[in-house]
Image 1 (cartoon, rainbow, N blue to C red):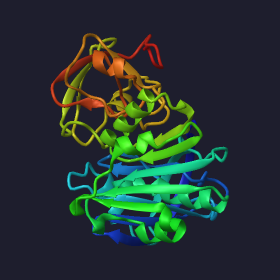
Image 2 (image 1 turned 60 degrees about the vertical axis):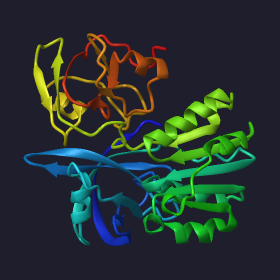
Image 3 (image 1 turned 45 degrees about the vertical axis):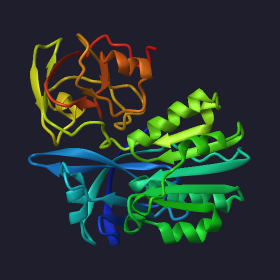
Length: 329
């Protein structure tokens, strides 16, 4: 679903530490302005030097209280500024909301539902569980965490789902049996998932191999989940000859826009493909952090989604004009 661009101020109502490194932040917002149904996300403008950067967070909400926006933010040790800033907010502080959308809206036509969450990916699944249970659906949830003290919302989910909740902790030797899970899924089951990129890639691959209905796999991404460490890299824009440096705390799309280049974009989450750029020649250093490109496109390494993907170092030359937006095979 396309994100709606907004000009809205949200005021911090309260902050609650759910785990040592996950904090829930509740904002008071004008009633009825934001889409706060399960699966929705909100984009905030965060100060950065003399400018700003944008960060999107999934809502914890299920739409029941349209005047209150709740998100959960994990404080990253190698934070590029987003989580540190969000953790600095206190009651009464104000922050600008610049976009709101939902790439993973609830659906109510299935016979049964599975929710799969990894780490901070539990955030949208909390509202999804409440929504589906409230409408009388059969729901089971698998929640994977490294340690039990990282299991944010575990008590809430236990109250909502009861025996339908399966909590797996790596530290206790409890591992997700993904093959068994996928083999248990029938053509009438809908699976919602959010978590690390590796987990979601494995599910998407297994889903496709089993020929399960593509419309029954729903997911949301978060862009900091890459295959390589986040490092600075350089880009040359073929049309202008401009050479740009993208720092470890920046993304390619923002740098292109700030430097005056006109680039199409929408979701800023690696889901829609509008900001896909072509490379002049294959580059093996591309860290694909999107969920849009096909496996064959990734294997060619001749394009990337500028909003989330990057290089693990080095240089690439890209075309921003005359590109074919969308999948090419």
